[in-house]
Image (cartoon, rainbow, N blue to C red; front, side):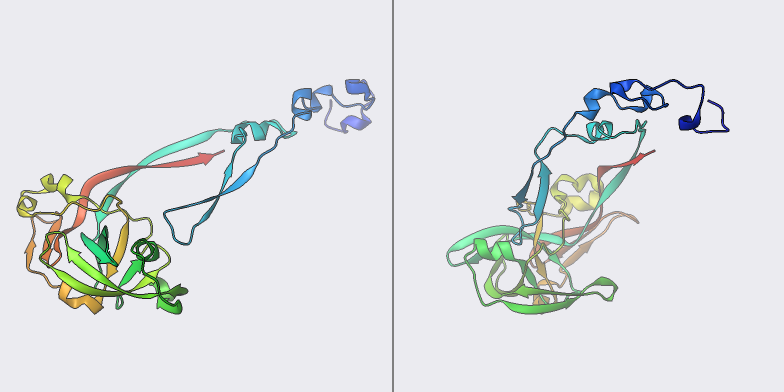
Length: 266
């Protein structure tokens, strides 16, 4: 076909003839019959995340539809190229330490983060529920990074906080948090990374809770738990260990890396 007219005006083209059509376009413009008759269906269902007290709602596709065959169901034939680049992210440790929480005859081991930049201590609401604690909800407004303000329902609770070695046992008052206090951050088990420097060999790190999520934030209202008994450092840039009343903690790069995969499509 020449470029001076459209297919419908071409006097040299024959009729399509596809499925009885008589227009003057090429029959290849019709999608294959198997695509034209295909019905794509999906069934979505809600799944509650048991690890969050305010259960996120996730949507899953239960049919066998994938991204590839939904693209084939369109009228256009596309060539998709996926570009993949791999990057590694090294784990950086916060000032975390495991402790025991107890109330109403129940006891649970959790991971805590010591944060002297916060004024009020917090406990994940799901932990309070596991210990059988309950109280009246009140609206709590907190200031977060970038001058943002968040408001959520919270309970004031009291429980016993105990160090893993049993040397410290105190009354611990805190407010519940409906979300994890440090998001999806997972603690570093420094017992596995004491070879990061010979200076760490003198530190007796406690074994963390089975769930690597942080459940408690210990703030300025518990100053007696923040003071340093001993600091141990190595060469410049190596992890820094500190002994506090609740035990040893360490900050810095652990050497553990996770693969981050970035995908792009053209």
